[in-house]
Length: 169
Figure: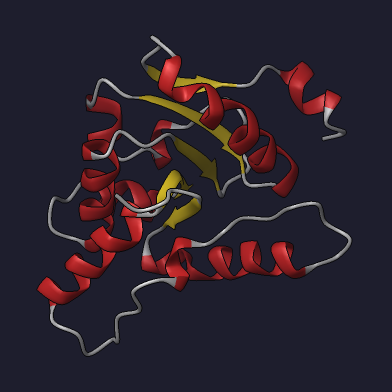
């Protein structure tokens, strides 16, 4: 088995700008946000066949210890359609029993079913919903993801307003 130390960021193709913003946060010396991106492994070309892309996605996710899903209406639609690459990524995340942090691009802090793909809500899986901000995403990756394996909790969870205010948000 591969050494799992990466964060896999899953998103609808329409949300690529938000993924690029996360990469910029990571590179910005004034923002305390870092992740070992699983997208750097097993690169597929746009011209690759769907089977090859899926194989590479699976290999990337074998190196992931956690998932950040960029939550949006497009992610909900594609993540639940059963045929898109995002739907496949969610399927693999559930198969590998990986902790999933849903970072809502609309800024919602209380969870948001408008951004939540059906396979995640239907699964008996423990997820954490946060707003799309580097500080709270980092907090969730350091706290929720670390306790995921030992938790008996299932379903979507959110942080209280006091957690956000304690982080200066």
